[in-house]
Structures are given as structure tokens and as C-alpha cells.
Image 1: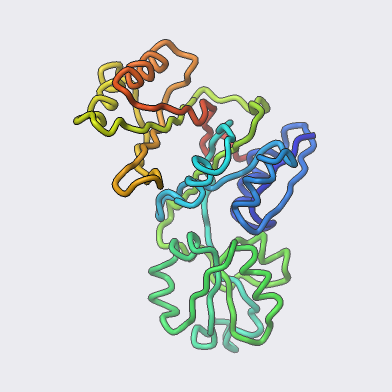
Image 2 (image 1 turned 90 degrees about the vertical axis):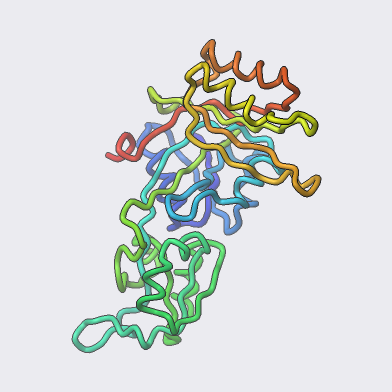
Length: 293
């Protein structure tokens, strides 16, 4: 048996975790948390083997809080990554919020609740159909659905997943309310143990690079170390070090495993110019198409 912590049951994280971990011939125990800090700490403190972390979205970009926890608060290597479609739906009680002809009564909707990332994915829909409604952020999409369930007759709705609506006895008032059809979320599986239950031909390595303060052109030198070796980088992101204003580290996703000759030599070249390099993980990468049944 293996165990995994993730955000609440019925959330996108829950659905993504089940796609990645279920059906592998091993019993899975899930531990659910409302806050991402508790998801990380569950694994960091040894209560679960892995943590499932949403880290980046097509529409909203990187999830800064989750990135900061991964880098600053815990020491949990990345063991795998995969993507999952983030299809958001407007959820509520149809008996309360539909007209006699079955159409949605937008004017009766007083409040819309969801996780801030999910809410941001539906910005145009909310502006177009519900400009009058109060928008409230909560810890997860599934928590929003539960709050709606527990407050009937108040004109409250949630943005969330079909599974959460079914689990809480609510209805999908309007499906696929995200602003873009190609809305995917990238998830990381982090933990102290290598994940060997799935294999992939595609591998990535994520490193954190801190530049020397007194080396003009250091970032150019870092990128050149990869460029002349023809090593492809799929993402570069800067984040503040939280030590001094204007100081940043760089998160770099590399489309290559550390089990090669080229990547370790590139890292050695970067360190030779005075950069600090921390490898956050070298891991298999899975597409949604490769995982779905």
C-alpha cells in the first residue's frame, strides 16, 4: 500500500491523483486536506508517502504559493509530473436557481464561491453572466461545493467538479464554464521515495539556480551552458529569495534526465561561475493522453 495527501475530496487535485495512482495493482490510501500547507506537511512529516501538488495552469500560470512551499518550506524531491484537464462547472441547487422552462436564473444567484485559481479560469464567464454576484475565495473547489450544500435557499453557487456536485447532492447548473477549452493543470508528485509504478519515455529535471551577486551576465552564462549542448528548457521562472529586495532565484525545467552525460556537465559549468544549484528532482513526465484509460 502507498499513501498520498492531496487537497479535498472532489477537487481537481483529487481527480488528478486518482488518474495517476489508481489502477496500478497497489492499494492507495488518500489523506485529504483543506490547505496546501497541510498537504505538504503530511508527506514531509512522514504520514504519507507522496503529496499531490498542483503547480501550474494553462490560464493562470504558476501557483506561487505552492512553488514557494516546494522551495522554501520542505525538502521533498519531485518524483513525477503529469497534466490533467481543469474543467470547471457552475454548481448549485437547480430547484432553487432555474426558471420554470428549465433555463438558469442568473438573477437569483447571489454568490459564487471557489478556489482563487479556479475562479480566475472563469473570469470572462463570470463577467458576462454574473456581474452582480459576490465572488468569494475558499480553500478548494470541493470546499466551495460543500458550503453551498450546507446553505440552501440563499442563492449561493460554486465553481467546481462534476464529482463534487454528485458527492454533495447538488446539480451542475452550467457545464464547462472555463474561458478556454485547452485548460490543463500540471501536477507534481513529491516525496522521499522514487515513484516506480509508472514509466515514461519522457523525463524532466527541475533545478533551482541562485546567481552570484557580483557577476554581470550570469543569467546569460547559465542559459549558454544549456544552449551550446542543445539541451531544451521547457520553463524558466524567477521567484524572490525573500532575503533581499531585488534578489531572485530561477526555477528551470529541463527536458532531460540527470542520468545523462550532458546535463551533469552543464550543471557543473553553472556552478563553476559561482551559481548555487539545487536539483529539485529528476523524474518521469506523463501527458494526459498517456494516463487516461
